[in-house]
Amino acid sequence: MIRAKYRNQLPQIGEKIFLTDGGLETTLLFHEGFDLPYFAAFDLLRDVKGKQAIENYLLKYISIAKDNGTGIILDTPTWRASRDWGDLLGYSPEALDAVNRESVELLKGIRDAHETETTKCVINGVIGPRGDGYNPSFFMSAAEAADYHRAQITSFADAGADMITAVTITYAEEAIGITRLGVEAGIPVVISFTVETNGNLPTGEPLQQAIEKTDRETGNGPAYYMINCAHPTHFENVLKTGGSWRSRIGGLRANASRLSHAELDEAEELDDGNPAEFGEQHVKLAKYLPNLAVIGGCCGTDHRHVGAVHQHLH
Image (cartoon, rainbow, N blue to C red):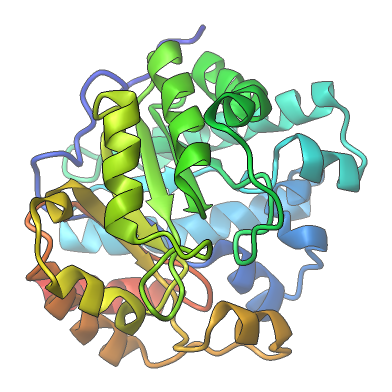
């Protein structure tokens, strides 16, 4: 196992706002013109052109972080780099292990070239759900989820990632399984749930219930929680209701579009919303989140949106 730089003390906890990136897949697909079967950005690591596109994408966010004197969390492009999705793309288990490790090495190279004392670069291994992040069609127990995600988490831990984040998670059992694996591997875990327009998870489970259940079943295992892949207006009312559970939310990666997940699935053009308005909406959300530490974006967002959020929060 390779020693990780920040694994034992994540710098985004207890400091000023850290940045992360926006919608990698939607940027590459709609702005850069790449073909992404199954929304799998990791497949671009096959060639030099794809690797360079991912690096160029991240450099825009590093530049924003440097300009604002803050740190950044660098995400691996591996949301789909797990067994079932790899099978669809023709990747063997060995090939998936290699690409997950390679993605960490790519980010280490970027960090070595661009990290400064004020812009710390945290390497984050990204894990996606086993099923559809918008419309889960089957459900695993926590034990089944741990079995499914074990290979990818092992790859990240052994390659020296500082942390892992499971994004667009749609139900608590999958979050619990992933968290238990991270604790077992000795690597910090962040769980990012996605919600529908009513603020509940796609299964109908309330966000508060999912967070409290995951904490209860893992001994407060996650370093913190995030919300991603939903517009700020979709979950603002849920946060307004109050409760100490909100202190466990440390990050936001919202969608640019107000459309529902079902509408986004059918959309043929990118809805990138209004970056300035997007930034203003985050100021409202921050009032309800005392431990907000990380801001970025999800579908439809790019460096303009993340820059606007940081500008408005400061």
